[in-house]
Amino acid sequence: MTKAVSYAGPLRLGVNIDHVATIRNARGGGHPDPILAAQIAANAGADGITAHLREDRRHIADGDIDRLMSDEIHLPLNLEMAATEEMLEIALRHKPHAVCIVPENREEVTTEGGLDAAAHHNKLAYYADKIAAANIRLSLFIEPSSVQFAVAKSMGAQVVELHTGAYCEAVIEGDEKKVADHLKRLQDGAAEAHAMGLEVHAGHGLTYNCVKPIAAIPEVMELNIGHFLIGEAIFIGLDEAIRKMRILMDEARKSESGK
Ligand code: PXP
Image (cartoon, rainbow, N blue to C red; front, side, top):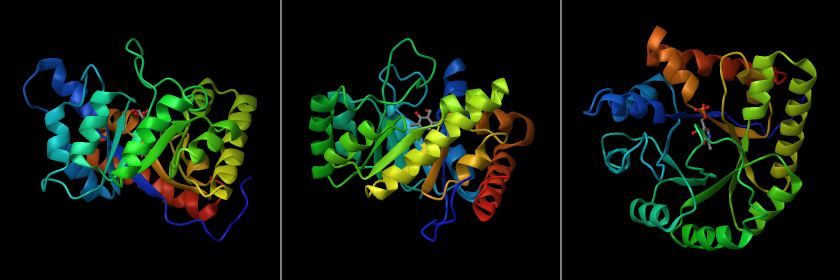
């Protein structure tokens, strides 16, 4: 059970449009257009757009980032990227609302775990300094762990995004003990990070079935959700898929228990 706290602000929804680009790239050409998806997301109640420009450009392309930063779409862009010189140059050129540094392995299907900020402190600190100097909000995608929070704070990150993948997997497996353990780690982690002055976001693997307990964590200010929404859009349309998610998030936030 999460405690009721007065600082629980409105919960923002960032829609990740990567997998619209995945489908586009399967055939080449321009359809379906991820920027049209971003516009639909804006109308359906999204507060921001998230896009991961991968080193191998398997989904989002450089031209998509150009367009997401143009007048075609008025929502803030959360640019997910690996800590590389190439990505840093792109971020500094575009100056998105936020940069979220994520771990990236070439062979992985998706971002499989949080960034080990503690192990890569020196390298990450270099990128964090450049991003801060450009006045871009810095977020680190990490596991809920005291060590990771301390390192994020020491680097000047304003935001930590907690990886919800293991919790969502446990929900799919139907393992109640694992679900409870992962949820508690996320709840305790959110409270700890918030107490340290870090803004807390969460994401990865969230679906209609598992979003509510995460949305109910009062310190969590933003959820970033992609794959499930784009998949669900095939059946009910993107606008409807996002509106349904928004309703579940808002219901959970009101109840504060996620039930
Ligand atoms: N947040 C971060 C940092 C991510 O890397 C991803 C996946 O790109 C997401 C959120 C969204 O995860 P999903 O697509 O599973 O909803």
